[in-house]
Length: 191
Image (cartoon, rainbow, N blue to C red):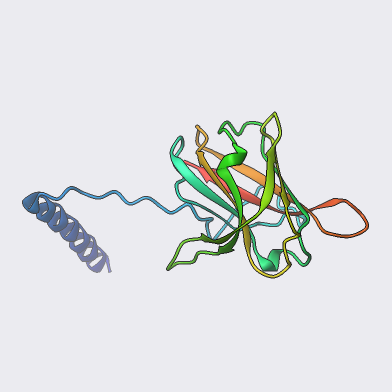
């Protein structure tokens, strides 16, 4: 059993050596592959609360200080009512500049293994960021219907520092009571 393990290790080392020699002969440089900025399949939380709901997001880059576009998505299955107002809370240690003119609300095609998330059509909305940069408020011109996936697209330079950021979504539905309710959280990692 030890011989078969040794043979597999030597075969793997031989393949890696052949790739390095081949790239040296052809003059091609080694390409570094970065992981995409999608949430992982498994998420570990120290304080596992039943009231916490994980929301889908996509980011074009998860490297600190790198130019990126974030898609904070509310999928159809994450909500049952229309959206009159969307409030996103941002941690106070989030040091990237949030600019309303670099944000847009759009109907989204959610990405998968074979494709990335993208805006299908922009939805007219008023977007405001408070002075402390800890809250983004989105007022769609007409309430977002309960069917379909919608995202807030944010173009920014990623924050500096290798940290995790929990952004919370509060949604106000049309009706008699003008209250916002917790819809879920995006747990975003910057490397």
